[in-house]
Image (cartoon, rainbow, N blue to C red; front, side, top):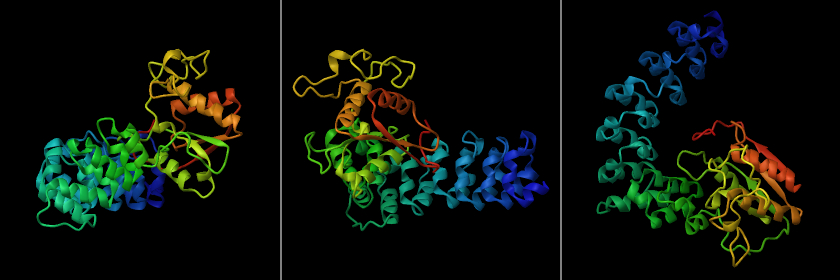
Amino acid sequence: LVAVKRDGFCLRFASNDIKNDKEVVMAAVNSRSRAFEYAGENLKKNKEVVTAAVQLHGNNLQHIGKDAEFWGDRDFVLALVDVNGKALEFASNDIKRDKDVVMAVVQKNGLFLRYANDDLKKDREVVMAAVKNIGCSVEDGMRWQDLVLAGINKDGNFLACANEDLRANKDMVLAAASQNGTALKFALNNLNQDPDCLKAARLFDELETEAYIRPEKAVLSIKFSLAESCTIYATEFALAMKNDEFLGKFKTHNPNAWCKDSCDPNFTDIGHPCRGSVSTCQMQSNNLDLATQRPCSQSCWRFAFRFHQQESKDTDGFMIQVEEKVGLGGGQKIETEMAKEVGLKVFRTYTDQELPGKKN
């Protein structure tokens, strides 16, 4: 108790019994608000401790027990969303369709409309409040669909706040991707892999033969980032490369911009023998477009990736591997092995940022 009063982060090294001691945890959180991360699982479902922790630091929300019964308690959730509207994400379905609760959330942060029930994303009053919050100019006669488009034109990531029908609408997705390439992760109906939408997001070259200043070709080894559950870090990195004064001079293959198939039923099983070569890949008949003799949307992803690795090697190019805090993904580990086989130079970047989204 004395130790955590002095420095709440000492809770990290305590036994499980101590981490579930309410007095100790409250003292730790009062000393260091982020120490709540190290509290025991029982106390992460305790209303009093959770309320104190979130009031001290809104980001403590990510460490609350997501299966706790209090997510169905309307008054409790209202108190939490008053501090951090993202609490709506973990609320019960009944609360997510409670218009008063959702209005309280979007009036503070319109982008949190994404966590509401789909029906409320078509409610004109709710959508109006959300787009006003993010700074849109609106007119009285605008339909809810027009309000959503206004939000998207202000911030492409507002696509996440659209109902499922609009997220599957190509015009809406194009508008969002043109505004913000990372918004493509919120598209439905496979539009996150649609060539036009990828081009709008600047993640896909207009032409395979598009000219670049530097003759060397580059390859990106990144985690998939175009699904809603994924982090956006890889997409942001790819866009930053295109905009970089130096790196933008290299033609760079972004594997996220390709439809993916695989001769490996599990896709990223490092124990599977395929390493993208003619001798190891089991999808030879589908791997090359007959007209261009290049990989196509039906290619095994390993074959397509190694094809681009070889092009990079042949042009004295390189691979940039983007490692997120949780480590390399399964596919990236396979890409590392293939780079060694090809003899391709690899430069690895690393971030220690905690990234929202899927962790593997």
